[in-house]
Length: 241
Image 1 (tube, helix red, strand yellow):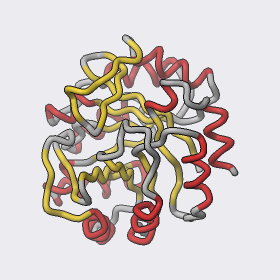
Image 2: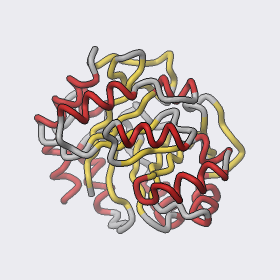
Image 3: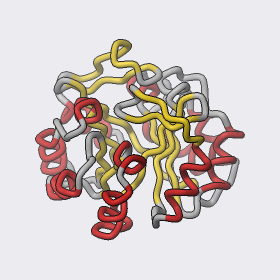
C-alpha cells in the first residue's frame, strides 16, 4: 500500500479541516508548495492535493498551485476539488496531475461521469465522501440519501474502477479508522480504492495493512503527519508491515 501525504488548499494556504468543517481549520503552511516540498524531502513518493476552494465553488481555484508543485517536484500527484466538467479535468491533468479526483458531479451528472471515464479511464478516481454512512457532496456541505456501498456499486456499473473513500466524521479527529467499515468498502469495490479519515498514529496504518484487503491500494494521511505523530518513513514502514 502507498502512503499519500495530503495537502488541502484553502485561500492559498495548506490547511486541515476537522470533520470537513471549513470553520474548524488549522493552517500548516502559508504556501502549499512548501508543504509539498517538505513531504517529498521526507520520502513521500506520491502526493494527494485537494482544492477546498474549488470544492465549495464548483470549479477549480488552485490550478496554479498544482502547476507550481508539479513543476518543482518530480512525484506523481492526484488532484481533486471542483472538477465537475470535462474541461476542468483536462485542465488539472495538463497542469501536472497524474490522476484527477471527481466527486460531486459523478453523483449528479451521469453524462459527465461517462464522458470523463471514457476520455481518461484509469486516470480518474471518484471520491466517495461519507457522513453518517451517506454520501456527502459540494465540499462536504450537503449530505445525500445515498449509502456508500450502494453508490460504489452504481458507479462500478458505469465503469469506475478507482475510488477515494473518506470517512468525513473521522477526518481530522486522529481517532483511527473504522476497520469494519473498511472491510465493507473493500467488499463493494470492484477495482482499487484509497482510504482517508481518522489516521492518528502509525499503528492505525499497521491495522489497515493487517486487513489484507487486496483492493486497498493506499492511505491518505494529513493531520497526523503535520503534527509529527509519525514520519513519512514510519508511515510507509507501517503499511509494509
